Picture 1 (cartoon, one colour):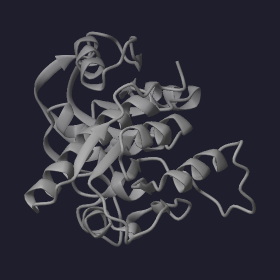
Picture 2 (cartoon, helix red, strand yellow):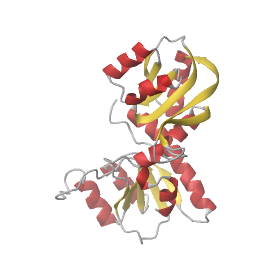
Picture 3 (cartoon, one colour):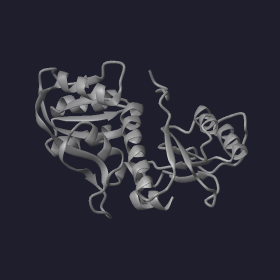
Picture 4 (cartoon, helix red, strand yellow):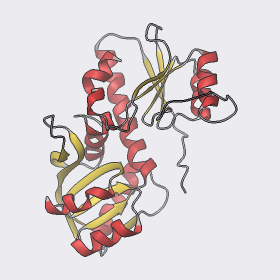
Length: 258
């Protein structure tokens, strides 16, 4: 938890968010971590099957105070299994989105962007904030770049886009998860394209009006690929400290939207 706090301080989180320890005992020994984007019942059961002590997720299990816990419905079912199996649930969410080396930096890295900078800097912190913007090594047609993104994200279907397929793309903004609200800022900062998820009709219209290309990589896909990359980085940091902690990725996790 101290390592995560150094990488992605809780104070970087949005006011509505609830990252950190969701369930568990800070004194418990850990030698295996199971990684899943979402804290689902399947994920916590797989954590138990893997004999892992920690379920590490991007999305929080608990957003608001709970008045009662019913173990037959979400999130009580997940909490119940976690408590009976001795599993801690730890989340790094919008604090990891904003942090250096977090979700958006990993997403930029997966796409091979150079000269990466924060898209929307946090006023109280340096070099952190929402989204990233950077340059491709060379110009590439939008249709070809969409294929490159699909491969990087492991998408199994064609990505929804705004923009003519032959349009040249060089400068790219990325926001993992849901970042359509930053399309105007991306345009102002010279981006040829914004990659994000949860793109709605009005965001698509705004992009078309501004003249910036838009790719909807999906909330799940943009974060899953980046969170997996970050977790492997975290595993390497644990190894560098001499900690015998193994990380196992939920490889078969699926997008609830398809």
